[in-house]
Image (cartoon, rainbow, N blue to C red):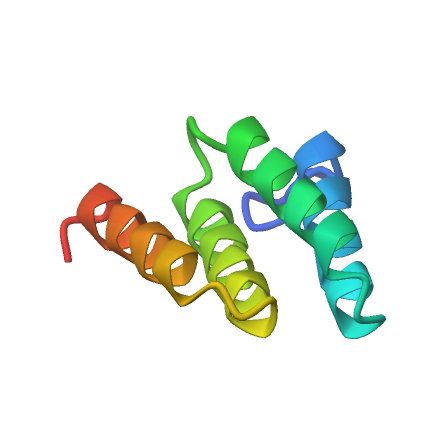
Length: 83
């Protein structure tokens, strides 16, 4: 029996999890690449997962010391969801 709340572990999920792990390992350039890939793969559908991926991307930009990129990413995210 398939549940609505159960989502498949796809390429976007792998990229998102990889971004989190690489961020935690302080491999920020690699984490940035994976976070951007997760967002690209999630541009359509799965709004919650897309929002969480964008939050991860903002965090990575901040850890890299790139405040401008963090602000740009944050503004894009909030416009997308109407906030």
